[in-house]
Amino acid sequence: MSMKFEIQPASNPTPEKDRVAKLVDPGFGRVFTDHMAVVRYSQAKGGWYEAKIEARANFQLDPAGAVLHYAQEIFEGLKAYKRDDGGVNLFRPDANARRFKDSADRMAMAQLPEDVFIEAVEQVVRIDRAWMPGGEGSLYLRPFMIASETFLGVKPSSEYIFAVIASPVGSYFKGGPAPVSIWVSENYTRAAVGGTGAVKCGGNYAASLRAQAEAIQHGCDQVVFLDAVERRYIEELGGMNVFFVFDDGSLSTPPLGTILPGITRDSIIALARDAGKTVREEPYSLDQWRKDAASGRLKEAFACGTAAVISPIGKVRSVSGDFEISGGAAGPVAMGLRKQLVDIQYGRTNDPHNWIRKVF
Image 1 (cartoon, one colour):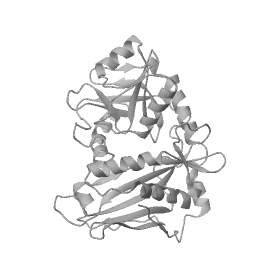
Image 2 (cartoon, one colour):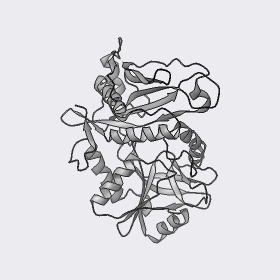
Image 3 (spheres, one colour):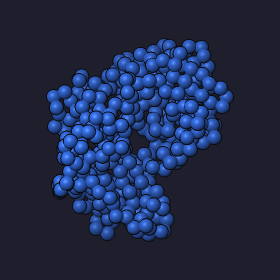
Image 4 (tube, helix red, strand yellow):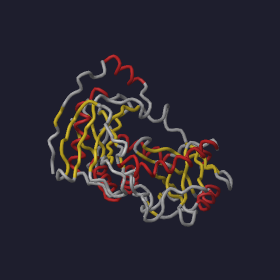
């Protein structure tokens, strides 16, 4: 199914000097572009209709709008990257479109056709290309869908709004990736088998915030969750997947099921295997992590996700004691994979898996 987007440019876009000033140091997710994509869904109207690119504006939502009461909401995160030749790349938007569809399915929401998702993202990048930062900055894209039917019965909504907004972001780390410290959450869990752990829905993130606040109280940057059943196995961080690197050159990462199937995670597995490394997807316990860090068998640990790409993990803190990984420094495997991935995203090296989609 393909849809024609009606394009209605903003009548009063941000003046150029204001835009340039905002792009100097945009931070993350605080500055927004002038436009958004919106597509509506109604069961009564036979599905998706009214695809538009329009000025970014508030939604009108009834106080009984389903999303406000039963949290039928999903989202994605991806970036557009400016190449040296002035063109713009998207990185694996087809994978985001597919995951968005899977999330919708789990949350009993209408499924948006993948080509409509990609078209909406591309159109926003095209109309707001002047907002693309240079250097290691990028245009962060946030496609999302909310249940918009007005009712208070507990059932799947029959109406939805799909939208894409965009936010220019600077480099996630000023002066290169510094190793992060993480707090092991032993009181709170993120997801159980059969739950929504593999879905990118707001509720998962809401459930992680209390644990993240606890991490900050303990002087840590991030929280890492254990499995909900045995409270032994590492699952993922509040918003990132995690990898372990061993002295034999192999890597390990927690298996899918209750964690988000990260697109950065999947890309790292592919690049590591391209380089001839063994990558295992298997459970890894906190006790084992502590032992392997002490014995030197574990050489590196790092987190990965769209926003930060790769963050080395230097220190782990928990109720049962703290430990460091390789003296708390960023390791060569994490940094090598990060450079390789970023170079593919910005079009500075070849793209063996055809991950790049050129917008122009």
